[in-house]
Image (cartoon, rainbow, N blue to C red; front, top):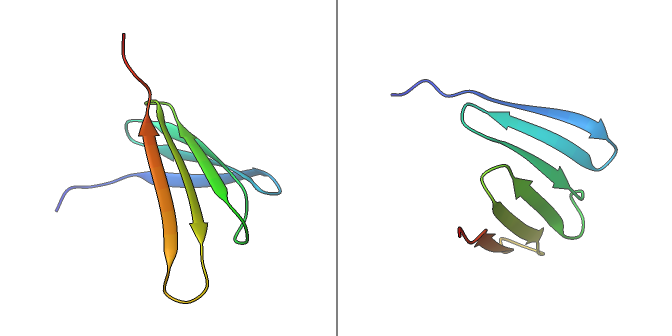
Length: 65
């Protein structure tokens, strides 16, 4: 099993800085309502918890070029 590193810091209420071995990301939003994540690798994710066992997520990547 590989060794992984991930740490999350709360910068402001509703804003988190997530640091991993290869990249970092900033997440805004809370438990209720939409949550948006922007990564240093160009990935952008919007997610939202829905009632019951449901969840919604959409991920896009920055185009290179």
